[in-house]
Length: 76
Image (cartoon, rainbow, N blue to C red; front, side, top):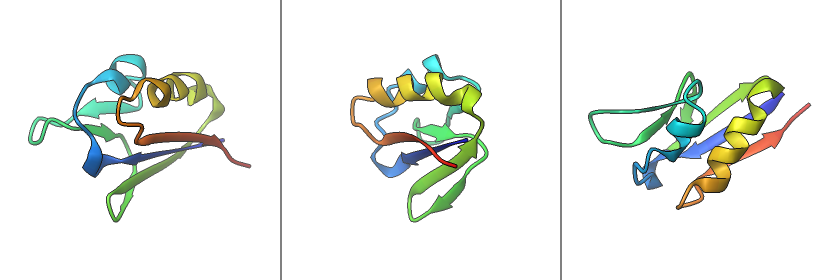
């Protein structure tokens, strides 16, 4: 299992995360920011627990995020 976290308030809407992991991310038309699909929001941080099969694409999304607001970590 992996945990993906996104500090959406600081998102600049570059769309890189959507390009490398479209099954996990989408762009919102109303504000032009990325949204981590199927998440819980706690004070501007969106978090999702998902399977290991999504690790590589989301790790790449975290690595290329220009404002470094995506974290991906393995959990037990």
